Every structure is written in C-alpha cells, then in structure tokens.
Image: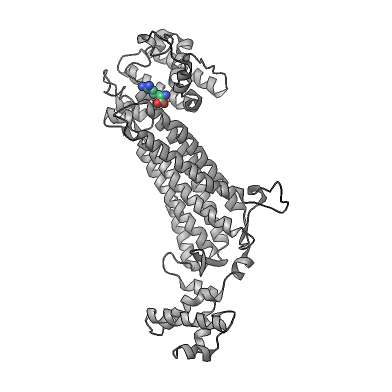
Length: 461
Ligand code: ARG
C-alpha cells in the first residue's frame, strides 16, 4: 500500500479482491486522453499562480504527451499494484518519465474528485460532438431524403394497429424524423448543460492557492466554472441526463423498429429489409429475420436499465464525492456505445430497405374512407356527429349486403340511408384525394409532408 498514491497513512495491505473491486482502470482507461488534457491545463494553471516554473511546466507537458502516445500505440504498461484508475496510472507514469520531484507537484490543490468530474465531462462532450450528434443528424437526413423520394407512395395508417386512414409512406417517415429531430435538439441542450468546469474545486472545499478557475474552464473549452465546489465534485446529473436522453431516444428507435418489423412480415409485406441487416435461421431454410430491428428494440431495454441502475446508485448518497459514483462509468460508456451503434444500424436499415408500393397501396380498403364519407355530408352542412352515424350505417349496410366495400353501394342504397347523398358521393372513394385533402399543418397531403420535411431540415442546421 505504501506504493499507492494515497498510501502514506496505511500500514496494512488491501485485500486482493478489494483491489479488483475498487479498480476502475479496466473501464476508465478509455478516458486517458482527456485525463492528460485536463492535467495539461491544470498544470498551466499552477504555473500561472507560481506553483510551477516554466521549465517544470514544459517538462510536465512533454511527459504527458509521451504518455498520450504510449496509450495510443498500445505500449503503456499498467502497474497492477498501483494503478487503480486512469488518474493514478497517468500520474505514476509521469513520475517515471520526468522524475517524481516535478511530477509530484502536478496534483497540488487538485483531487481526483474534481479531476474525474472534469474527465467525465470532457469525455462525454467528445462522444456527443464527434459521434452521437453528427450521426443522429445524418440518420435524420437519410430519413428525410427517402421521404422526399417516395412521396407518391400511399399506405394504410393505423390506430390500435387497425386500418384507420390512408397516409403517405413519407408521412410515416416524417413522423419519426420529427421525433428524432426533437431528440437531436434535446441532445444539443444536454451538451450545453454538461459543458461546465469542475476543475479547481479540489476535493470538495475549493482551491487553497487561488487557482484561476476561469482560466482552467476556458482552456478546456468549457462555458464556465461550476459555481459551487461541493456541487462541482458531486454532480453527476450530466451522466443521468445522457442516459435519460438515450432511454427516450431508444424508446423512439424501438417503436420505429416495431413498425418496420410488422411491415416486413409476409402478412403485411410493405417493406423488405436488405440482406445486410437480416439474418437467417439455423433450422428453417426459408427464414429471413429482421434481427437488426429486433436488436434495436431489445437494446432500448438495456439502455433504460442502465439509466435506472445509476439513478438508484446516486439516490441518497450523501454530499460530495462517494465511491458509489464510480458506478457511473460502465453503464454510461455502454449506453453511449449502444446508442452510437444503434444510430448507425438504424441508418443502414432505413437507407437500404425496399418499399413494396404495390402491396402498400393494395392494402388500402374502402372502409378507410368512412371518415371521408362522413366529411362529405359535413360539407353539405350536416353536423359531424350525425354524419359519423350515417357513414357507420353505410359501412354496416355494405357489410350486410356482402359488398366488397362502401363504394359498391348504389346511389339508391345511399339515398335509402340518407336522402342528402347525391351522385357526387362516388367522388369520395379515392385514396389520393383523401390524402390530399389533409393539407393543414402536419397533415398527410403532399404539400404538408414536404413542408414538414423542410421545417425539420431547418431545425437541423
Ligand atoms: N476512479 C474514481 C472514480 O471514477 C476516481 C475518483 C476517486 N476519488 C476518490 N476520492 N477516491 O470515481
């Protein structure tokens, strides 16, 4: 234990299992780069207040760069006895490279508490700005361009998974693009909130040498220092927010996938997935299963569980840093990777699936125009509650007469149900027209869908 960074007050050895149980290096070493960046800026801050000389700072920065290279090319050698996490590993190595006399000054006024909080924010910021946000934007753009290309295709819209009204396939696409655009905007807000600096807060009480926290913050690209040192070290809201964001996003992904799984069945036959995103059965030679979509749906449960698990870890722990908080890493890192891969897979699925226009349009049935039939009488001045009833009678009557649809009732039969039906009633039975009538904001008419897509593109700018 004497070898450990905190070993001074210890006489006994740590239980070997406790060493493993305590260590976070196996999973926090992926933060090696931001940890070194944080130390660079922190030591520059120390130099600024006279706690390091310019020469010492230069040596330290050289050493940090060497460590960075060692991690990057896989030559960093971990010391199992001392390296419990990425912070201790980097500091130990710095001592070996530039000597302990100088390396021993690096941690002056700093604690792993403000260090790890800083690293985590930097790491999350990187993943959000380099991966999740641009990948998500691309995913949405793929959906939007598909929606533009296939604007002519009609399909049944469903409520309760029962055929409801005809809609454009692009309207369905635009619906999910709308969800995902909200997700996109929400994620940029999460990014904005997490981009604050805990560095210089010390272990909890603040910095005893008057370090310039504004300087540290600015040089790490943060918007501002977190205003309370106790909060700076104890706040993991950003971790929870990312996992909450991910849960909600995956919820949308899951519903999107569920729709597509249903549409890909032989019974629906609206779409077929590309081979690239399907797998077969080991027993049934004919099978082509939508595994990509099922995994997208299944992984939403995993992400939600990660959020719940860490929420539980954080609840009722007392103020400032407690080791419970080390439990933020595995769920968060897994969550961000799962979401990253899910966005990429969903993008692949949607850009390669084939739409069966004939099957979609053949699934439209005349009963789906029963609302339009009611609307026909509304346009003649009959109150909707009454027309709803009359149209329902038409549906029942066609059913009773064994007709293939309400459009097969004769004018006499229509008039028998309500005298206000005229010759022009037969104009109602046109799916394209039904869709085109719904041209108010958000509707399924061509112009309305195109407007939706344009608005989404504007929001993605
Ligand atoms: N590995 C630790 C974590 O991830 C770093 C902080 C340790 N701080 C402490 N006071 N033990 O949370």
